[in-house]
Image (tube, rainbow, N blue to C red; front, side, top):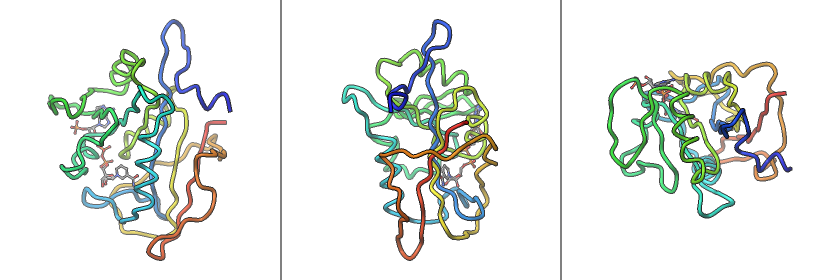
Length: 194
Ligand SMILES: NC(=O)c1ccc[n+]([C@@H]2O[C@H](COP(=O)([O-])OP(=O)(O)OC[C@H]3O[C@@H](n4cnc5c(N)ncnc54)[C@H](OP(=O)(O)O)[C@@H]3O)[C@@H](O)[C@H]2O)c1
């Protein structure tokens, strides 16, 4: 359990953040279609909100790190995702004012997060495809929270291949039983690198 609290770890002289990925994928590993989610599952969305928002230290917030298209996909009235520090990866010179911090690369995002680590508890990577892939392969990877939706949906965006050294673990903050909404079954899985 102790390691559960260690969302930052030492590397040399710097404290570097661990990245926790959160995603929902259907049976064919789809995560999106036409810039939207392929499904509407309120309990799954509430799980996402709880996991990415809750902090043990009320003086800290979590970061939600996402690709520019995922930011574009969030309806304007829900942007930025409230009570979280929103960070957007983009190669463009975009300015979201005080809504979100833009970063040119993952190392750039890590630097920005490290510089404000006193305010940050957890760092959540919330998509999309290429951001999941590069963070799963990075030395900063901590955990993958993956909701498996037990149904096939038409999708144009997919979750990348999960590396073979990822293993399922139990997190007591995650419901273990099968969830069901609108007749669609889903389960919350948590992975760490072996
Ligand atoms: N089911 C889920 O859990 C879930 C989660 C998230 C998203 N989605 C769905 O997935 C779709 C969007 O995801 P997506 O994969 O198409 O796009 P995305 O990863 O959100 O965004 C891609 C863009 O992010 C920027 N980017 C990515 N990696 C970068 C890097 N290392 N450095 C700098 N910029 C980087 C680039 O922006 P520029 O082009 O501006 O340079 C790139 O074009 C939507 O359908 C959405 O609903 C589903």
